Image 1 (cartoon, one colour):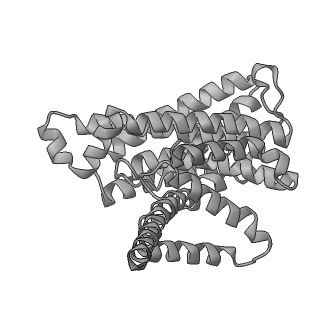
Image 2 (cartoon, rainbow, N blue to C red):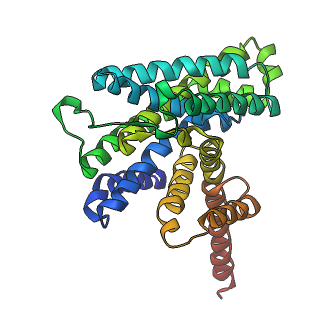
Image 3 (cartoon, rainbow, N blue to C red):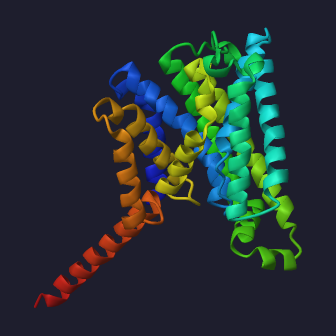
Length: 324
């Protein structure tokens, strides 16, 4: 069995058994946050990492799905209808995002998504009859999928874990599919892809839709976790934090956004309880990553490990040759 498969098996075992060795309910809740933010980061990584399209408006899509869930439940609809409507509205919003933002790339794409995200934040803040403004929307209760209640921290963690694993599997299939290869081709050589007969705009559009679906799923999980949604969840800071997860962990990798989500959520939720200036600490960590591992934590760690392994092998070889 290869080292990668062993690491994957160990990681899955650690996630499945986590409630039994994690100390306290608080840290279990933090683990749930890491999982649904990892789904969010995986969605953004589809565009930023594999498509070369950096978005600063994904928190708006995240918030639309969360608000849709809260509003539907507040209006008296069931959980199934609320979740389906949230996912549908998330996809519709992503389609609108894509149509408007894919008119440009690079800085232009960033600025258009930033503007769209700020529009969503403005609506969330000012459209009080729908969003509740600063007061937000409160939820009461969680769904019971297949008759299983997810009202406790452990049950919600396992529900989130299942959705996370399914999302990770879907992203893995997408990245390794011809569609994923075509998306990376549009990132590296868009003109050559056009010359080869590929429809670059359509490839990017469907990548946006997949990214929007993952973002909407994470938004639904977020609102069920917090039982509350307010404009703070859709502001620019939220988009920047998720982008930080992708970049710090390693854009264009499967494990990078997950590691980045664990880093940011841990500093924000755990370290902040011990260090008052946790924002400064997070910024310092990000600067250190950019300087020491510009490719991200996961690729940088792999690079250093391979370098150390080669040096150790060379030392063993020299020691063997030096023996009489």
